[in-house]
Image (cartoon, rainbow, N blue to C red):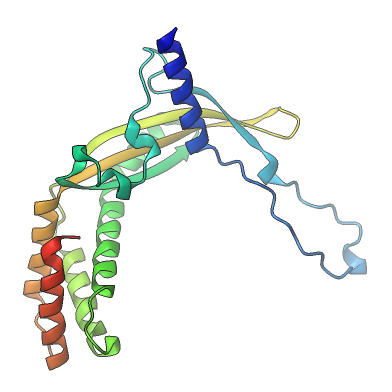
Length: 224
């Protein structure tokens, strides 16, 4: 009985996470236009509900992995991932094999590289280097050097999927789709080394950029 309750609670968490149902947004009425008076309003897709009908661990009664309902930033604070940077993304589609293949074979590399570049840019934004306009070019060259480098060392930690039915306001099934979430991780030391190498290899061209480089190297001592 306890196991059944635990699975039920886990399913509730997954349903809350993967549900796309939202509250209707208020709309401001537009002035009446005679030529459009007979046009019908499009259906409000925000009223649709989603119901989880299957999930990865349903067959064997397993639990929903805790990371599925967490944000990457929170996961990096967890002892399990204290030595890693984590990257999580989601795909949806009618074919489970299709979303898995796309997420792991096509999306993973480009998405992880993009997220790394975003984190580096955010780190640079926190550096106090005076006139940002005078060192913007240096930051851009560092990011480009990093994007041109081969990003390796990441590996898949786990994945999870749910199959949901999308319902209309009358409870009829409109469509069914898989929602797939995958988590990758990369050793902090490895990624920090890649970023540091990009900084070292990017030569400053002005005195302001020299100062910026030194400042960025200081703040990078704490990692991304």
